[in-house]
Length: 292
Ligand SMILES: Nc1ncnc2c1ncn2[C@@H]1O[C@H](COP(=O)(O)OP(=O)(O)OP(=O)(O)O)[C@@H](O)[C@H]1O
Image (cartoon, protein in one colour):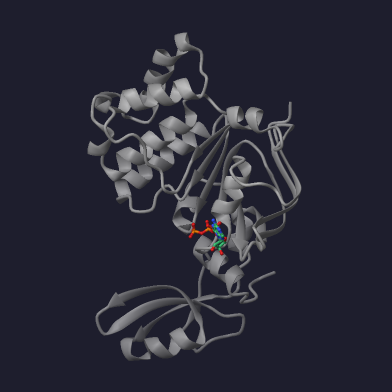
């Protein structure tokens, strides 16, 4: 059986408003990042993959099962939506057991499975807390627990780290990375750092079109030869902001250390520097030209 998601010539619309255009992607086991600005179409693509939105035209197959087979697809896919919330007055373990029942899991398996999943997301010790008493990070981890309680082959996670503190963010990423050892995990985000540390493959969506689909390294390499850095007086910052795409800036009082993208040579004080994933991403979004 193929362990792949195949998306071919996919178009998706909300009524007359088409928001995904001719999407072609193949996604195998491991972590796959879906990167794009707000409104690019990431959530729409994810909702289509979990059968919450209909396909206008094109094909989706998940491990050889066509998306039209909703029941089978739902048993194979776990989903953590962006605005995840559940049963505030239940305890963590009650809520998860309840969801396990709804997912038609064998009654004899439920206790063992919920324990295993809560251990995996580091919430077993907190299982008796009410859901409403959880912190944002704990809630997000419970979100992962509910998404994987039926042991799906595919896990789809929409903008999971927004609003998390750095420690929770790292913890969350590590949980996903562990799960990706034997599942297809798709992670959507507009935070480039989330992708950099966990995904090998990614797609960049912009206005409903795929701008890039490949390895993280290739995205970075796209900006090679057009990244420059310099320490400039603060009063000149505005000028550079107007003329170039700035990919980072660090304030040192009267001076600012900036990194910018330019296809052509820039002023003398700028020295060429190594591109990173943020440079690659912005090079693509702003069509600077890069090394390609
Ligand atoms: N229910 C809806 N009805 C009509 N249009 C919608 C609906 N949901 C989203 N859209 C539109 O579809 C486009 C893509 O939105 P989507 O939420 O998929 O983007 P996104 O990349 O996930 O953005 P964000 O990071 O802000 O969640 C946007 O133009 C949005 O306004």
